[in-house]
Amino acid sequence: MTVARILAGKGHAIITASPHQTIRDVADTLAKHRIGAVVVCDADGAVLGILSERDIVRAVSAGGGAALSDPVTQHMTKKVVTTGEQASVEETMETMTQGRFRHIPVLRDGKLIGVISIGDVVKVRVESIENEHRALREYIASA
Ligand code: AMP
Image (cartoon, rainbow, N blue to C red; front, side, top):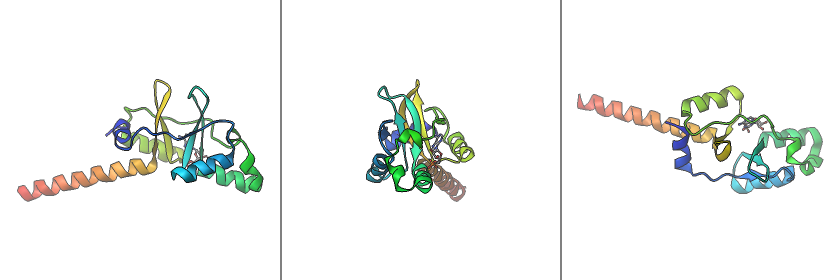
């Protein structure tokens, strides 16, 4: 199972933020779309960083309510770990576990084409394990 299969199932919709937006703007975007992170892109669509709800919690904890007016660029993670469509679900899960993050942007030729969350990865892993179990049960029953 590849990242491409996950994207095919969930679609390529990508919620991004612009570098000039504030933490408050991004909090609104996360709440509106019921997501946990946005990829921050420049006007040409190049990935500049990623900002998740954890970054917002940290920013508010350190700076209080005033942090909501800070630009996203002040609190985003700039060294973004990305993946490609041909990466396997297993290796993507490993990357996210090692990096301790729950979101990973998918790039094709350097362009952002989707975002995978740990929830997407767990969902397909559980489905795949259930399918394996069903096939094994059917095999045993027919033997
Ligand atoms: P998350 O678990 O995705 O909410 O993110 C936890 C922390 O990792 C936050 O500081 C994020 O900015 C950062 N982060 C999230 N996704 C990535 C990624 N793909 N590459 C690098 N850092 C990330």
